[in-house]
Length: 259
Image 1 (cartoon, helix red, strand yellow):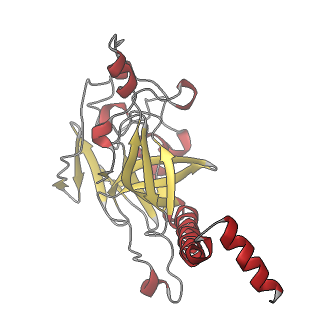
Image 2 (cartoon, rainbow, N blue to C red):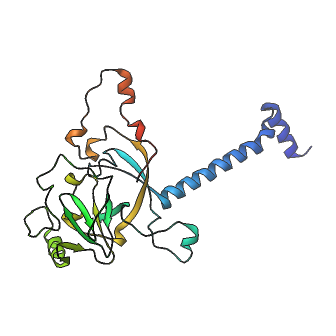
Image 3 (cartoon, rainbow, N blue to C red):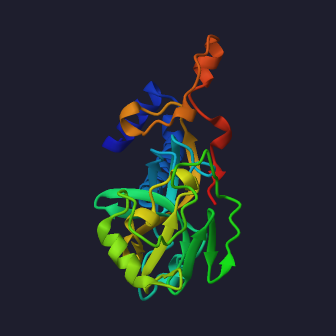
């Protein structure tokens, strides 16, 4: 009997039926390996996980929401990119993830694109003279600057970047801000409590990194070091054990599509 035959007989005697199961085990391991490779590819090159740290997008995104974002949808097209990935331009109403200052990322909503004329009166956004329909916008409780018109007629807010003020002044005509080529104007959905383009300026097209797709988890109590806690986000103390066990997450927000 050959050496391989002897080994097979020994294995069969010690682990009956193992040899018959080996092809199935090998197929399962190959399938698992393929799944891991695809998951790593998706997370590395397509999806980007991140957590919402502040309330500037409240009404749409809450403090503690964990997002999966598509980092390819706004990426520059390659010679064959259009046939592989669904690239498209950034449009009004898109929620975008962008570089604010490397490596910091912010999440805001685009309200004006290159060529638009923008003004804000009594909290309402007007694009090219027409009021923008914004069912996602949230107002109040108002901050002291909530009703200030935009663009402002004078520099009287210390929170406005001076360099941005000079650029804004040069682009304002007849009370409207003209959005230059390659630039986008973004606002937080929580309009009265958001630091956005009104205070620091445009977002360059090259800075736009990804588009949020889905909330894959949501924490009620994120780690204090990772968030900016808002007063109205405080939770009471639960006495019930089950409430303590299940109350750390917003289960109804998991797998919610972002739009």
